[in-house]
Amino acid sequence: MTPERFHTIVEAYGADPRRWPEQERADAQAWAAAHRAEADAVLAESAAIDAWLARDQVAPPARELQRRIVESAPVRRPSWFRQHVWWSGAAIAGVGLTGGLAGALAVSFFVLTGAASSMHEPSVHESSYLTTGFGGSPDDWSDE
Amino acid sequence: MEAEDVAQEAFVRIWKQAPRWREGEAKFDTWLHRVALNLCYDRLRGQREEPVAELPDEADPAASPDVRIENEARDARIREALSALPARQREALVLNYYQELSNVDAAALMGITVDALESLLARARRNLRTQLAGIGPGEDKS
Image 1 (cartoon, each protein chain N blue to C red):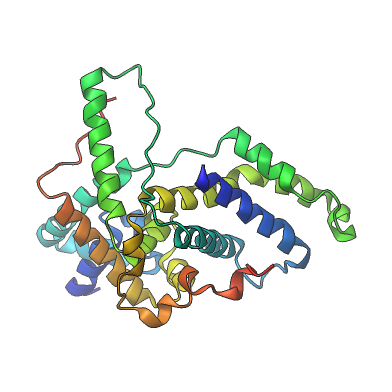
Image 2 (image 1 turned 120 degrees about the vertical axis):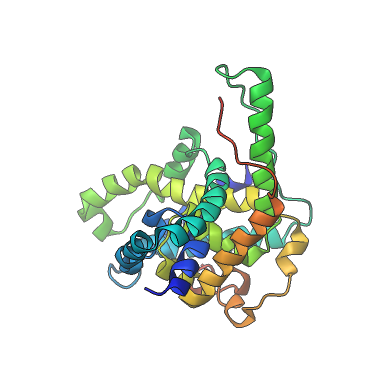
């Protein structure tokens, strides 16, 4: 762990070691312990942003949304689906959890997304820009 | 609410894909994040109005009106700062910080290297720091 790498980690992931890359966490913590003053200065600066970020929270999905999602499930299921009863139960039970994931992401975007103009700002990662949501990647089977 | 429509639409994709899903070929949560991201951007591309939603006012009986107003103002301030970030920086922050995806998963989802993700995250934080300079995050007094 170099000082530069420690700075990079904290500047990217924040002051909470639980959010640091798992494979580098122990080394980064050891470096911080060995260089307390320098580490504390970096961590304190980043902790302020962490505190701000923590203020923005998304409410869990409402029961009504869970009901709508369960009702949207196909009524007729393929034979393999019927044979795996556990999956049916898991699908319904998982709606809350997975709905939370998808819902939180969607809420984050719709609540956090700024003016539409920001969507068209030049990106320094233009090549990769085309491979995600902006580029309509087919990897999500969205054409179906 | 538009976000709920996206969540429901994401499940329609799940139902459609379920019969052909083969465990081990892809991580479900990564796939679902990609679906949700694409759905979000599809919708955002189709709208030109200011999409920053107003959160419903929820009265907090435990907080006095002035404290509640102060908390709401702080929450609004961070929301504004987040919404002002360039889209790719916000995307990185949402996936890594709020959705708690690993750096490898978030980078893969965005089609970039981990180094590029870290650059986006660091720039996002610097931008936030600049926008929020002089204002402490405070403590939620409610």
